[in-house]
Image (cartoon, rainbow, N blue to C red):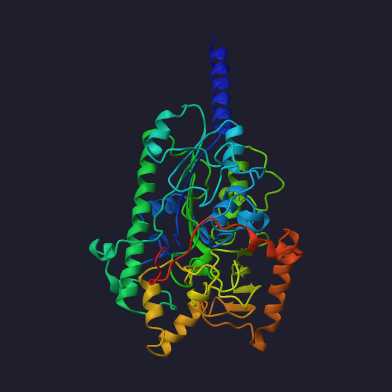
Length: 487
């Protein structure tokens, strides 16, 4: 009898272990709107307070080198959902566009595999999804929130939830940062910003909204704890591109293309608290989620799962062979050129040491034309840069002195076909070395590697037909000059 009881206990133990192993992980994907690197406490920012992000990093993984596919909302989010570079998505490569409903997206693939899915506030877009039978991110819980989603779901059903927000997208309520207690003099500015209190206060207002997003994620973590789901939930917290400031958002420098990224998974992350230097593209999220959920990854996805990094116990560079660089680029953000509806097509490759940028139409304005009266769409004034206090200050003071003039040109002036930056010596990427003979070999090597990868991924800018991106209907509107008056 005793032997039978021991045998039964062993069987039950094995069954419980198998059940634990086979339990599909939940997924909570928290993404801010215009939140860029390195604006989080875990990265050493001296001002902004991000306790939720810092906790996720401390109890999970912190990635130093996470990059989006495009520094523009719609294509960045399209790339995340599809696990593909935005240049493979036709109209979906542009802001205020659409997405082919035949394109696989990870939330619907998970739903088809038995997950319940949902979203809060901003998920896909902006653009038009009228040709989709199901929203690519699931049911909208914006009116009730993540807590309501958790209450309504089946307890035995895994879930995938997109926790979005409009923070820290402009416009800002002027002075909210200072009023919240942010010390302007402690703010660390990018070197391409003028050091002026107008700019510092604008950055403080941005920080205020970053902190509001962080509080939203903290609330979601508490809900997971209340439902006993924290340890079996993969939490990913990031942004869709850089901050909405000059030379940031809609630019392929680190200030526009690099984003915060922290991942927590109590049951799955080995040696939590690690800091990683592997390059991660946000196109890697979809195949990672699918693989961890036991769902087949479509061959069309160009992203690569980083499950091996989660399972590793190493710090620093875990996969030096597979993650030594990352690609990103841009098509049309807004149609802000003078003579046509085109955008400013860019492709870039980033290694630990260098950033190489290829500007395919150097004749165009990288931030939209300053000559708004002559533009194809007259109100798109410097349209690739959101209106705000820093933009206005830089434009109004561009002739104040040599420093202001130089910073204005860096943000809004035309650029050469090639740019190369030594990221170790010049972390804010101000000095273009593409014309320096001593860097010629490096430039040629990076240019060749970039073009090789663009051809391999079927980029029309490399294979031909890239001008079709400029012909996609634009469904939104761009920043307006202060003198603009609607008819």
